[in-house]
Amino acid sequence: MEPIRVLVHGALGKMGQAVINAVSRDPDLVVVGAVDVKANRDQLQLPNGSGEFPLSTELESLIESTKPDVIVDFTQHDAAMPAVRIGTKHHINFVIGTTGLSETDLAEIDSLSRQNDVGAVVAPNFSLGAILMMHLSKIAGKYFDYAEIIEMHHEQKLDSPSGTAVATAKGMVETRGKSFIYPETQKESIKGARGAEYEGIALHSVRSPGYMAHQEVILGSTGQTLKIRHDQISREGFGPGITMAIKEVVKSKGLIFGLDKLLGLEKE
Image 1 (cartoon, rainbow, N blue to C red):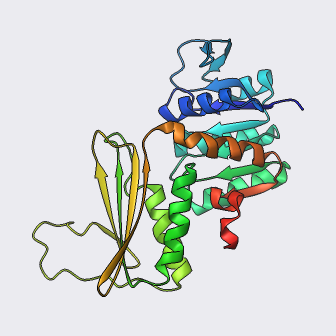
Image 2 (cartoon, rainbow, N blue to C red):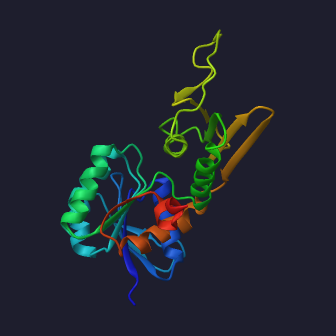
């Protein structure tokens, strides 16, 4: 069987580099091209030094010359949606890790994928450990009335709370079937001390050098607390989730949202 041909969109970013490294290590996959708005040369070197592949600022022309099976997108919203419109027109599958996509965007991705008979995987997090942390938090949340989420990331992360924290909170409330109890502060000495709030869950964001991606869910009831924590110590940890998504998306049609569905966890 021929390797799955992968084009990386946002290739010069940190996650784009992590995608290239992960794909290059998998014998069932091959990087055939890379696109980045900051591209200033025509070729990129494979991580093991065994060869080169084309780099461009122009997605459509590179699609036509490299014929990828899957585009992996780690860019920004304003770049991701135009890429989906171009790529699906050429009958290419998508794996998308870009955050900030709205429900309207997701509906469009699903519609375009189905119209062009391809698949699309959109996931707020590609760490298998983080997905399991979120899943366990949903299970535990049914048995506790109080919940807080502390997420910790590097100082260059653009959004807060993180997409993973928001997805965790939404999943916990959905599974629980009602809001958590939110203790109202009688006196807030400094505004925002309790963080953000979603359906009774307080969300706190830490941004500092020394962190990669970390999240702790704290559940409380009378006389006890339960903590569920995941620590991502390097971007290499995203590799298994990304390569799994690439291999699965070529078998699917339409939108799959979240790695939990690829793992079958939504049935638990």
